[in-house]
Length: 117
Image 1 (cartoon, one colour):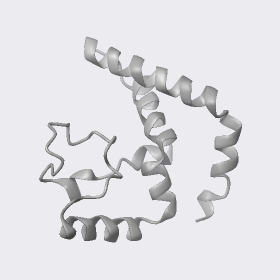
Image 2: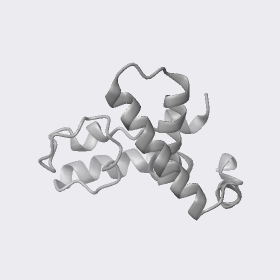
Image 3: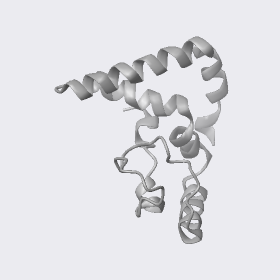
């Protein structure tokens, strides 16, 4: 399994009270890098991120890796419901758009040397 798959940000750790008032699924990564409103939760997030290190933060928050996790899950697990297929289709559309805007070669260049961090 690629290392970036293990870097799903633990948003529940610092936003467990759903401060933003949304009904988002707790596994939704789209707001994982948002700063919590509560100072105590900000501290928890900062401590976790400092302990996790730069490579984890890159894998956890970079939009490329967020989409890559979705693409990989779609390839690994069968889609059984229409909402799964819709979500995978949307993810693939975002992926294709991102890759066409910024070629894969640039992503490789940006991530070279991260494994040594």
